[in-house]
Image 1 (cartoon, rainbow, N blue to C red):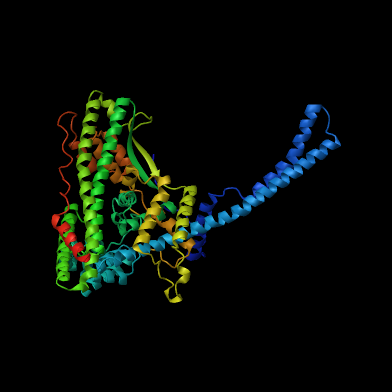
Image 2: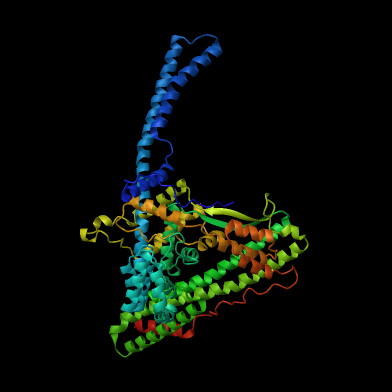
Length: 637
């Protein structure tokens, strides 16, 4: 049973402790605890053990053994032998132990240095990645993305709120008003907030509606600021769904284009969360009992996981395609892909590639008529079109797999119903009491213990050293002391791959259940971390921010209830509803709605799960290939 996580430790510091000193102390304690997980026994203790064993213990044992074996005390020659043996073996043990700890001390120092390097570098890499995201955009898209990043900061000043509002609305009066509302919110004058909202809502709301389609995430954040609400660190920030799948796809296909910079940001956040002590709960079904029913259950669970992965893969490939087009200034959509539906993303990407192919045709015609200055531009545009077509093919293949996985899931559902129909309802109902057999909810968590944290930090630290990431601060000029890390897109994506490889042996990110659990939780808000903070301060603040996150299992529990009713055709009994509400905070209205759609086994056949069909992607258009062929023909001349 999952217990509530204690989010706040009782303060044991005195009132005279400065916050910065307290942060430094807590951070150093955290680093020492992680490092100690690798070297648990101090070398002085090991040395004393050797001295004690090789000295008094050996002599006492030799004297007692001789007395018991021969019935008399050892002779002088025997004492000389035992003492010489003790001195020689003890000296050899001491020398070996000293050599071990001399080298081990250096190893411990390297481990501690790598842990500190990782804790120092990950927050800076997070800021550098966000800068790369903004840098990859142009015009209004860059302004909106930067404004959204500002609005996500929980401690953003009223001036910062006003600046973000100005970037989004391009209206100084409205921006000043939203900044004033934030001032009143900070001092708790919610009555004045309500007054201003009531007066100016009709004036500002149409502007929100107008911009929502272009920047849904940013406008949602700004609307909350207008209504007097700021991000709450207890709830964290939503994750970009399926980011782990895209990183895995980039690894499996050896193609960084399948991974976006937003995925890099999410991987860095996840790594710093787990190193800082984040525990992510996992809820899943398990069945133990009749082997035929268990095999049918496992088959249906595997088919459901496979279908979910196929659906996520299609959307992930589509997001990667649109992100690539935006980064190369191809798409006419002046906004990031956050919050866009699959059909909208497909429409934008096809229109963008159509425009690109037409530009290539025009450039090729211009070169044919003698304008050789356009040759370099044509070469670059042809390369972009080649990569776009490759990504489009990956989208098409991914959505083709959705249909196959859907058919397999229907077959597994029919098999489950056929097997479970021969058994009593008591065999398949959800069990809540003690015991291990039957259909039950299994609880686990995704977390790193101290030893795993040390191993992960050592692996990441070795890579950061090899890639020379995190050592640039010493080479920055004094005037640029607060400048964040300078990394390129390829380097940032490679760090995301290394993070995945370092975490996989410990938390098994490749498992569908783990990915679902991570996607269903919000990430910790690390907006208060700044580049010029010390390593200890970053460690302490990271741990504090992770402890702020509230564990909300309501959505996960409701998803389990939906799967229980929809896929396994198991009745949601009143006892099960009460358990899900009491234990996980599931909403009564949602559970009651599921009981209303309960179907008796065999009453209706399986419905198609493609009632909300994926977008019809199709194969790459022929005129795209024709544009490529013409471009290459003119470039080869």
